[in-house]
Length: 349
Image 1 (cartoon, one colour):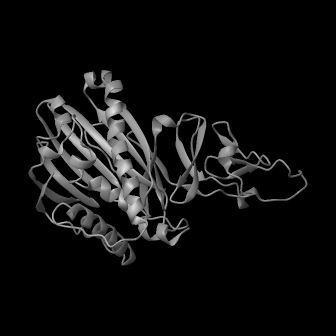
Image 2 (tube, helix red, strand yellow):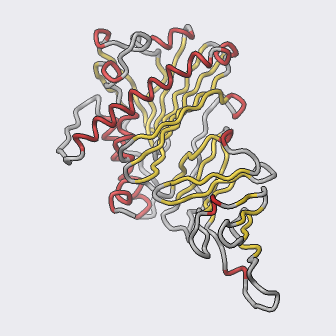
Image 3 (cartoon, rainbow, N blue to C red):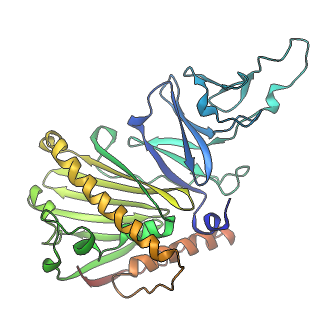
């Protein structure tokens, strides 16, 4: 694994790898995750699992094999493994040959399905997991039945640049300039209150900006935006008695490719009917971010010295400080001390 990948990507944390609706019973799926080949699956009981996508016999990916909902059969020599990664059968062995199948084990990653999404825990040391494991981000007021819309995109950049772009409050009038969102002429001064929260920070509940036109569809609304390490953004919108929640996650596949999942939950019936009309706007919004990241890479390839300013770039500074503190607190075996202050930030967008 490259040094760049090791230096930027946090471990001993959960990453969202796939919406659960995309993994059916009796199905497996091979994915790259943090530079490792991972096999995801859902057994006949509906339970999800994740293991290394490499057969320990001759190294072929197990995702090329067959899965009957209980066992995975390697396509090369037919070795079979259960959903816990234990070898259950080697066809070429004669009954008279002594071989302990317990010696053969495919590494299994901790895997959980929470609010309709599958998360995998990527450990620093696979032989020594933290006890207890960290909590998976939970969204208030909704459950899996409210998951309405999912979009996915690949960003050609490192995880750090993807996350900083995710939390950047000043790029909207330029990157997302459109009739239904914002224009450069609509820019004005904004002040938002921030407070530290679990492994991150929260922009406290407020009325959306007047130049965020899409919010006007829902009448009198308020929104709260929370960021949590390693790369999760949750926007929680209250519209009368209803809730709309946007869950955005960034998962590093390699040192130069990041997978974005944009997932929406809502409790508004008419919004579900309008989903075919909403999806193109969501896709356009994501494509605008991806395109600007693609352009940014042209300059980053020359490793320039970058400048961060106050206050618009404070969230980016906090992100790097949060990462550093999490690593240090673990190395020193002490509680995490959130470096984000309670403060008000001001910028123009």
